[in-house]
Length: 105
Image 1 (cartoon, rainbow, N blue to C red):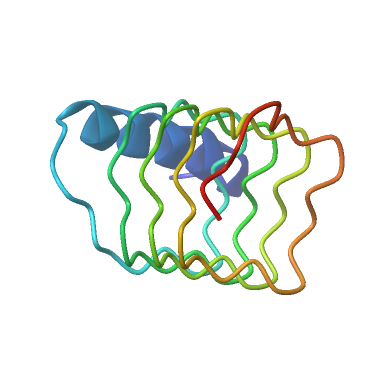
Image 2: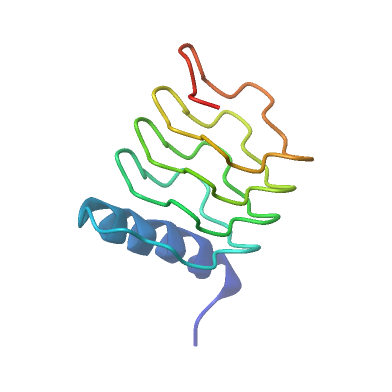
């Protein structure tokens, strides 16, 4: 049987693989828990991440234009070079997030 503790790492690994495919992932990921996933250079324009647990996720150079990240937790996430133009970050937790350059908000 599948343990609940096994689901989060499996989800993080699966979305990392999908992100590497370099295809537009306009999907509903509301409430997903993918802590530590490597989504660098991924294309997530218009995707839904409402209340998602994205702590320690690597979004370096990712495309998140018009993505809905309302209420998402992005603690210690790497957002360097991410394009968040038009993204909804209302009520999101960006504590200790890395964003040393212009995020194109």
